Each structure stands twice: as structure tokens, then as C-alpha cells.
Image (cartoon, rainbow, N blue to C red; front, side, top):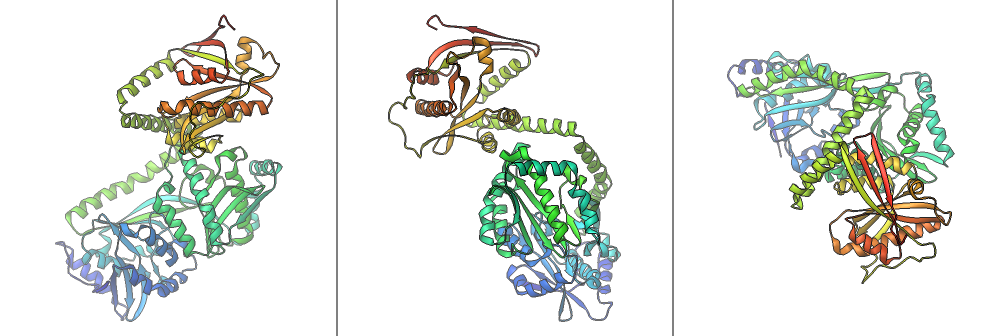
Length: 626
């Protein structure tokens, strides 16, 4: 459904009728009157798709976010949560402008936001002033039920900002313009070789590239077909979610609607032209991805991610090097890093594009008060952004803030889990004890069990669940991030960096799952510390020690799962010609029983004492039968 409305209608607020009526009359100044149509059904925009494309092509620097393909993919994904309220401006019988807007909870915004990095209207440049005036006049006088209009991510050279100053005073008095952000970009111009050469020859980046090449065959390519692009999307989503979780943030791709939006976007945009889905592969295995857009001589890097298990190769930097090399050969105007203030971008850019937000307030008392607040924000926001930007540039402060955020998230997640299990009070007590032990005094007692050299791996007791129900395998760091998100009680997010260091030192992680849910986690590491306490192995073999943590309190599963983990561990250590031993805490009675059943021998008991950070001592007690 659509409704055509006059550009000089009745006013809703006292004291504004004369001003807005004068503004409406000015729209007719060029002779042929302009009229504004309010569109509330997307089917009407479908009918105008050819006009939409014509107006988009009028701007030689138009962004991908103003294409009809982007609008249709976005509406198919998010439209059920919004009401369409777009304006179509005509001059006589000719359609001269489109202002694509939607409304939700009384807030009007560009169609396609907040997923779009840039917002703008569609029109010829010489009609931009009239299109803006007609749309804003209709918004202020005819559209009901809205509270505020937020036109965000407006580039300084957008149609809206270049003609904002031409608005009539009666309309402009209800608007407030605020600086929003800087988008780092590389302006290429006519000397692409001179622009990209110092970026591609950065010593640090080339060293990373060479390190990766030594590991095998490296290939970067852009996916050319929709079917292959959709096949890589799930990997892209999974690894982006992991990367964000590692720094204590929730990835936007955790939302099903956003994942569906990208699938719809691949249906709308041809991967071999406007949509650029890049993949970096090592020996044929993908481990880094980027999603970008290429239109009008410009490449915009929208999102990128990589496999955390490949982080030793710094795949993010290598991916960026390949993208810059691609831009050097294929892009003539600009390489845009898009929204986001990640510090690495500043090392490569030669310009920062300013973006702004334009707020339109209702002609009412509440609108006046809201406009006053926007005026104050306009003066204070640049200062707060500069303070935040300066803080992010300090690595020590950034790491401190990140550590604090991770600790807070982990503590909150553990408390929520304890409350769901009905053990909140016990959890609080355990946390207080843990803080005391970590900060002041702790004593930990562990029994060490050794597997006899001539022994054979046992079997799980009783009736084993099916293979699909029980599964044990070693896992990488990325899977540990998933585990921390799912089971904060057993592995907190703020422990992940320590886990990464252990894995880099050679430690392995075994995860036992029941019906795809983690039940036990085992850490296997070289036991040089044990050798120093009790002497070397009698067989002369290297020793690999395991500790096992319980993820879920289902005691009925402990026997079968302990047995399966131990079998896996024994087989793995024997393949490496090593001697397996297991550290067992005193409260792990199920593990102790399974160790005895499988033929492990109690070697000794180790008691560890710690006072503050300076005094540490380990006492070894060997049983009489040892």
C-alpha cells in the first residue's frame, strides 16, 4: 500500500505551521511541483526497482548499501521487526528521489541499518535539496506514531550532508547534526603503485607472509559461485563467533537473522562481481575469510575472521596483505576499511573519512527537549570518542580493560549457571575460598597414578552407551573457546590465554562428550616437574601426565567416560613411546576407582603449599607398597 501526500500539509505543533508551510512552498520554486509518496509496503518498492537502480547509477561513488539488492536482502531478513515508511519523491510524472526508511518502536532509520556502513538517499545530485525538503516536510507534518528519526553513518560527501545546508530554516530547526566517527580508508587516485608499494613491503607483514609460506602451499582466492560461498559461510560465522568470544564480546553473527541476511545477500549479489568473498588456504585447508564489496572502483572490507588454531601464523595480517595486493591490481579509487576502530587499520590508511548522524525531532515539546539533549551530545561526543580512541592505542591499558571485561563476563556466567543449578550460595562460598587461596594461602593434595609398562588398556565397565553417545577426541584452541562459552564453570574465558600458552608449549586437550555435550576435559602435558620430585621413569621413557576435570555433575556417566578418556590417553601416549601417569584430586573418587580398575598403580601423593606469591613448596609422600 502507498499513499501520496501533499508536500504542504497541516502541522501538529503550535508555532511551526508558518515555517513548514513556507518550506513546503519552496519545493515548488523550480516550476514543476514535487510531491512525496509515503510507501508502507515493500511490494511497492519492488515495482520501483528499475527506478531505484537508475538513481543509484546516477552517483558515480554510490555505496553497495544503497543498492536495491542490499535493501531486498535486508528486508527479507529483518523486515518482520520493522514497519516500512519510505518516501518516494516525484517531479510531475518523473520519479526523482527515494528516501528508504523503516520504523521500529517509534525510531525511524535508514532501511538496511545498522548492518550498512554508510547511509544516504538516492537521487540525482541536482535534485538532492528538493528531495530532502519534500521527504522531511512529509515526515514532520504527515507521518504519525514516530518519536525520532536517526539517519546514521552519513559520509561527509553523501547526498544528505552536501545538501543539508540548503534546507529551509523551518525544516532545519527540527534537525541536529552530530559527528559520529572516522572510517579509515586508503585513497588510491592515479598512483596506485606508489600508494600500495610501502604497504605491501612492510617488513613485519612480509615476515609473516614468508613464515606461512614455509608451512606449505598458500593460496588466496575469491569465491566465484553462490554454492561455494554458502558452503564457506558456516565456517566464517563459527570462527567469527569464537574470535569475539575470546576478547569477551558477543559476535553479531550469533543472531540467526544476521546469518540469514548474509545467505540472502549471496542470493542477491553475484559473488563474481559486487560481492567479494575471499578465502585464504594453507595446503588446500581454509583458515581465514573476508567478506567485502566492490563497486564503482572501490573495495570495502566489511568483515574478516580466521581460525584461532592458526593464530601462530597471524592469518589476519596475511589475509590483509593479500587483499591489498588484490586492490593494487583491481581497484582504482579507494580501499575502505569500513566501520570499526580496530588499531591495526591506522597502520595502513592514508585518510580518515568523517561520518555523521542527522537527527530529526518531532515538532512538539518532547521533540524540543530531545533536540536539546542532542545538542549537548554533539558537543561532548567528539571528546569522549577521542578519549576512547587514545585508550585503545595504549596496549597495556587495552589489555587491562580486556582482562577486566573477560573476568567480569566469566564470573557472571558462572554465577548464572550456579543459580540455574540451585547452587548459588555454594558457588559464592567457593568463589570466596578460591580468591583466598589464589591471593593468600593454598594447599592442594594430588595422588599420582602410573600405568605399568606391561599393562594393557582396560575397557569401560558395565554396558557402554553407543558410539554416538560417547565420544573422546583431542581438540584445538578454537574448540576450547566453544567449551568456555558453554561450560564457564569448568573453563572460564579469562583462562583461555593461559590455555593457549599451555597448548603452544605442547600440552594436549582431550574432551569427552555424551550426546555431543562435553562431560570431561583432560589435559596431558610433559611431566618434567614430576621427574624432579620423584626421579626419572624406571623404563627411561618420557612421561606424559594427565589431569581430568568434570564438566557436568552427572555421576552416572563418570565411570564409562573416565574409562574411555583413560583408554584414549593410554593409546595416545603409547604411540608416542611415553609413560602415562594421571594426577587425581582427593575428591575425584570416580576417577580413582577407574584408575585402579584399569591397572594404574598409586605412585605417590604430592602436597602443594603456597603462601602469597613468594613461598611455594611441594612435599612428596610415597606409600609403603610403593
